Length: 202
Image 1 (cartoon, rainbow, N blue to C red):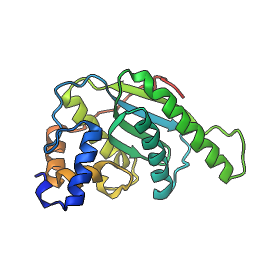
Image 2: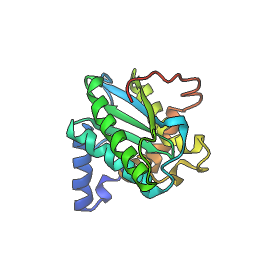
Image 3: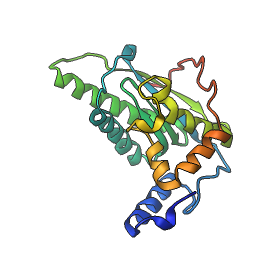
Image 4: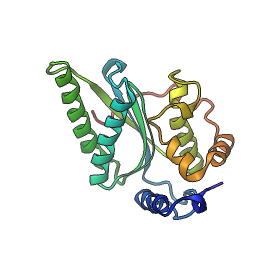
């Protein structure tokens, strides 16, 4: 159940602002009548080495991504950041507008990670891939896949135990029962198995 009535005035304001940013209806979970322009973006580090070891480091990367994508008015409705890759569920039209912001984030975070170890020129990021969302079912299965990712990779036993994930935003604003219902109606199953890494940028 969505708990809007239980929120404080400040929380209600924050919720409405976030919904406007993501183009969600003001007082109900999003129902997609048009999935055109929604994409799953996945970016991995070079050779899948783990650089973002702590919650603080992962939150820093997420903040950098959010700042860059907000500048070009790209909505992010789902995210998870892991030690060696991240997933974003974004709306952008055309897809090409996301390439430069991601390159800037990757370049900036690579320089900082190398600076911390007094290195220069070490490659941090490999590339990013995209998958277009086909319909509403695909959208919500993708959202579940994003939230399940830390468990899939054996970082935690339960998705809610992973801090840097949009699952906590959805739990706060839509409620745990909404998330459980979403999991029942849009199971992940073999979602993502056998994906190839088609390069869209680096």
